[in-house]
Length: 230
View 1: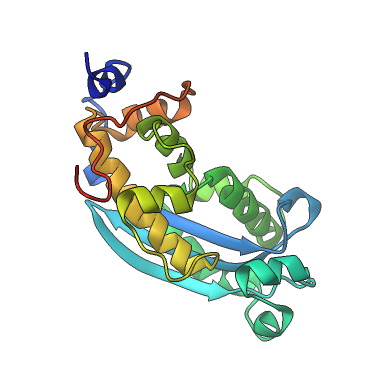
View 2: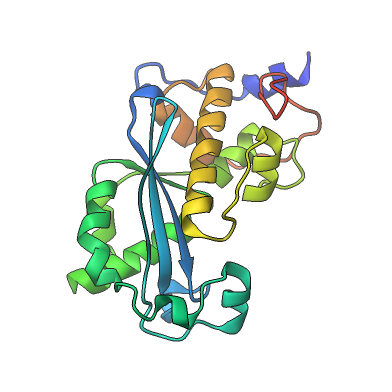
């Protein structure tokens, strides 16, 4: 039995669920002052991209004044410094417009827990009710890192750079919200195409599949498209 067949053997399909081609996804990326939303780090830039039935539509992007200094090493990574955000809107200023792009869509990000956690904290500040309000706005999420770990187990790494390289996706704005959100949206489209080939055709089965941790396997599955369409 070939590797592709082995990969498909542990897939649990749910054809009675929602076909993922009918799902409204919103792919999000945030840049921040650090890695700890619960420690008070803040968003410095956010972007949202709509995806439905393979169509990628950039919807929102803005710098954000984090109302605190940006550490030098973050500026070195992202190119976003205090001067760039000094006159930018605060998160409260953009919250309403951003919420309109998020509401009712399945939230997607590459390492979704990170972006979700920061937006949960930011919307909690705006609503003055604490963390958790974000879940009422966007009740469902899908992580492209987790999905790549299952569908692309042959890759040694599944960070955004590695997955983009696998699929031949360029990114002229790495470590900027708009560039990374568009690249992640394109990755999502490719992952969904591979999911179809692996008999994962509903959102429900896809979500369950992404949530299961499996040991890494060697060899390229026969159904993944890859950069060369192989």
